[in-house]
Image 1 (cartoon, rainbow, N blue to C red):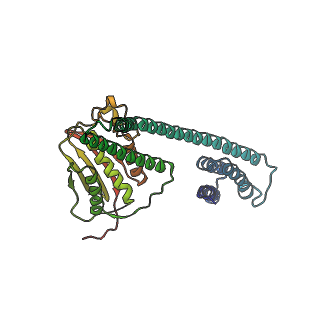
Image 2 (cartoon, helix red, strand yellow):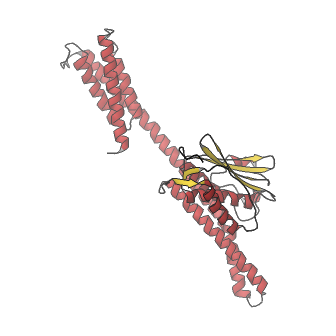
Image 3 (spheres, rainbow, N blue to C red):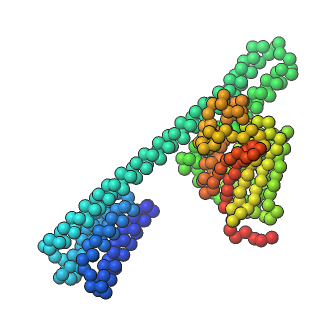
Length: 352
């Protein structure tokens, strides 16, 4: 049996039992019979509002009718369906169940349509971002390969080496693009389940720096970490991908920056990761949709006149962090931009 069905049955039972006992209290202690039907009608309204479909509301309406007829209508503890008041109560409660269930179902359907529209919008953004991002590197690879084939004999070794290096760089970047695209689509579709294991912060950052230095050997970064040992329940590989994406984003899009900082600090059982640069900052019109997967055309991106667009990488970061139950934000500073994400840390870590 599905969890949702069990929850709906439990809600139905709880509301009906609560209405029954309150009615007993009203009848035995306060000697009030007039509001019993109202209590059950309210319970049926809540059941229809909080459960899925029509069946729970309708069934609870019939159960409520039987309970009122049997326990709260003279002759007590006997069924008598000839009393007009009971028939009217039954009709009213079934009507309430039908109307409320219909309204609730309509609202949930509209929410599902809205959610699907949002997913379609995200998929369209990803498609535009991919089309935008891969056009230039593919053109470069094709052009360089064609030049080597047709004019290889007339080119110097230095020219050939430069072309081959460009092909390699573009191919590596395209591989990263595909990896990011696969990650964000799998996570958003729910096919990837986040498996959290205790991750030591220092080891996580060391692994990130090794990979980052391999890709950008000339780029230095200032690292600021807590002095104490911090353990974070997370998928280490995915969090590495987030940090590397943010560092690469700064390298590719911050313009002429001189300082790149990776900072981690702990506050209120939460670890905050920050990647800050002193570059050109983020255009204000793009801040609100920075993690949507598409950031506009190359021509209007002052931080990047090259092929690389931030969209896919930042969309991956947002998907991974949200799947971990954290938050990710970006903002401009006085001298650049800062990206920040949060993760809950291990609650019962050993004190050193």
